[in-house]
Image (cartoon, rainbow, N blue to C red):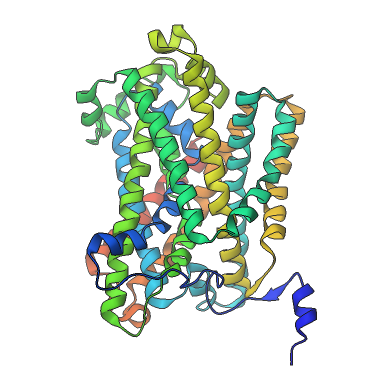
Length: 457
């Protein structure tokens, strides 16, 4: 018999069969009520997933895309969002139908070498994501309070205290807080967009792909081709850790797996929740690019860092008549909200990945300290060497997006394969058109990411 005292004091424990066991199946879904009541009960996981699609890594590429090429790259944001909806649908469905997250499903169907290789790659991708959160949070605190960057980088390490406090209130409360922060970001950029008075006709026209126009656009305002920025936007939008996260937190709702009709409805409600929240993320990314296009078109070279964007909003020579310190402050608040949101989801994903691939878990505070500690090292080194030069930190974010692009196919391929297999998913396997669309997206994203790596400079 296990010694309960020894187990209680051990930092490393064997994980249970359920993903995020503490919250798995913890939220009741009312029966015999309207569709909207049931959808409300299922709403929440989609918000946690949507956070990854509007994290600080997206900001530079979207704003610069608008500043350099006006509204032309809106079509890229639209296509990226549609791909995200497809992949997150697969991830959520895998979790609900098989009661396995993507890490568990992969570990259970690969050999030891493959399991450990994919675990290491996924952990590195999570650290790359965390670096963007450190940079975004540190720069936001620096802009809001004027504290030295070296201090604000250290301060980002203490967000684990905030997270641990939130976990005590229950998973539903975390979902509500994340949703509040998302709405904050949305309202800030909606306000900035309305003030910037964009060309609405040109904006909606930007959703139609114009590859000929992209290839002949004058890149004199920015030292990057539109295809490189296209790759950057896609690489910053579709990130691997979200697939692991969604396949786990989709299981927080109580569903009778033996009742196929209940499972089918759970998949339907999960899809609604995911697509609604990802539509909000799409709107936020659209607003980021529209603000860049409406306010900063022709000034792309001057917007090479978060601080430059912050300063530009209060510079009448760039932002025009609406320039105001208040707008700059709102930008910094939204950046801080974005970083904190991503921190919450990143910590949950870290636990999912470790438990799923390695079948053991460590306390959340220790997991957070390790991941954030590793992520802070390159940020501190660059901050010390370059004396708080924000431009170098933004270059670091760009590098992390490239690495995420490299890691993405290694998460996409098993997800598409598992959810397309009738042997694994039974009647819930992807239809042929979804399977083919998934593989086409996989091939297309892989080619774009390879272009980014070898020719993106």
